Image (cartoon, rainbow, N blue to C red; front, side):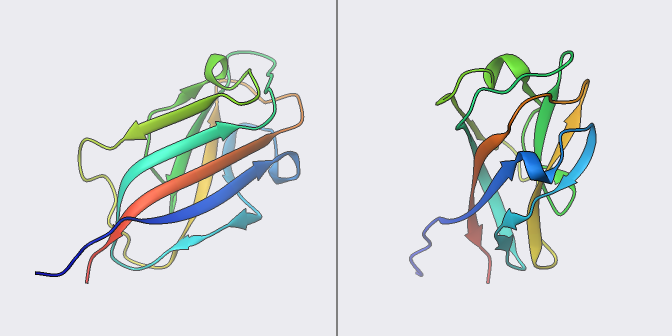
Length: 124
């Protein structure tokens, strides 16, 4: 039996990527390989985030969401960590897929610096 170990891909969501609602392509991101089965998503707010309303952020892989929408209240303190274990098989990648985010509810209004870590297993 093969020893299967988790692998990790990371991304950084910063102000230069955009603060407005909608799908955001991140300039600094790893790609997940073909056959990656996503199992966990971790988000670290490295700066406090603010918005003009009730903004939410959802992490995506290849445009498909891999976690619940994260409320502004969970990102408004620097150092705050959000981790979500995926309960169902949400994403097995069919191509080399980048990590992204989708902002909804309101635009962010301050400097963004959010680290994103995606845990996955490689399917042969």
